[in-house]
Length: 430
Image (cartoon, rainbow, N blue to C red; front, side, top):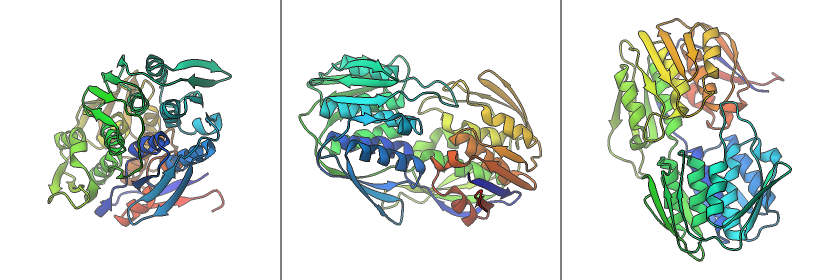
């Protein structure tokens, strides 16, 4: 099992390129199930979740090939036929986003058997809204031996209201509705950039979708979709993580190939606590842009509450908590999305942080000097917060279970090394 060894205390300086968004690439890959023609996706991040989903698609009988490009991977996917409509537990347990095959399989092939995802370290993430929506579209749903069995003899458009906002639920139902007869309206839908990117891809494939990025999405079903080539948007959480890394180390970074429009809440919050972030020039040829981040002379405490997009993302909460250990004063962090997403607080405390957790509320008292320690990651974003703390700490930090971070960050230790961090990956055999 790999670990990270970090020797902290060095400001980050230089330029770092942001990879494609994992959370946009995954639904885009499953959207390829909606057509028998080739779907080409560019700017895929080289992360473990992409490999897991590719394995699942191949289990279903889908052909795929991957080419390494200068920025990210290029994947070609052809779902000409379905050999096996089953998403097994062995793969779904590794990545809950595997449930995104459910809508496309039912819409195009009329049946699917998908394992229930099971537990999650950061809290309950039920898929009941996915199933309620598919049932309203005309699918028959039942459960057997830990699996969801869904069947439909053609889906029909419907109106569906999400009781709570669900990103993957919105994506699953939007994909299913593209091949349904008639019009589907999704209300209280997720507005994340990844949802918008999926809608853009589907429209390129011949779908008729309006309103993605708003609370109300309208999908007029079509008879069939066709192949397409599409580039995945930049990863806004990776970009936010590097912005925060520069701030916590007292450095200055150019964060390249990002989309500032997707980072409004993060940039605003960093500005409130004393971090300078500015845009560099105009958009590049790929539509992305660069942000320069520079640590202020003194960080100030600041409150934050996680919210659905366009609010402050829950996936940046752990990194923000690490940053606030180095801010002057008392910072209050309220987590509204997941009920158990402060697991990293215990590990930060082992490094010297002063954090009190009460339910969904954490109070961070700073500034406290951090010292290197042996710690372990509990989930993907917790891993990132511990890396940031290690970069700011005095001495050696050893982070165990970094397979979590490999799920969503492309070669983070290599990118950090390029901008001055002293971080290395060590294996059990080393």
